[in-house]
Image 1 (spheres, rainbow, N blue to C red):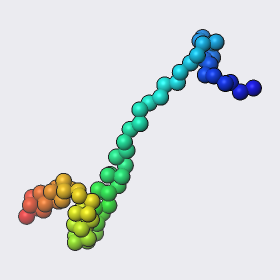
Image 2 (tube, rainbow, N blue to C red):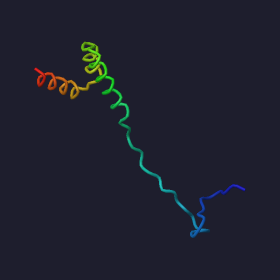
Image 3 (cartoon, rainbow, N blue to C red):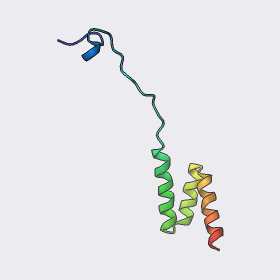
Image 4 (tube, rainbow, N blue to C red):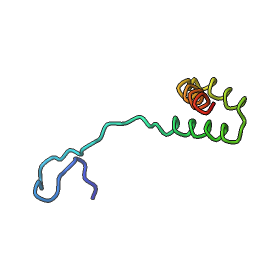
Amino acid sequence: MVLRYPMATGLNKGHKGTKNVSKLRHSHHCHRRLTQHIKFLLKVSKDKRALKFIKKQELSNVLEAVRKAAAKKD
């Protein structure tokens, strides 16, 4: 037999029970994946393609970090 209403078991037996529902959180997985892809493109020296990809995705902070690294290297 299936319960029609939420019921608690154990110590609260016979009383209505509510489940704890956590808030939905935004995932940053996609952003991390994109930055890793850009780093890979720069590592295999596809600079022009990587810079186009950065501009397309509007990741100006990554571009700034690349410029700083290049300035330190020189």
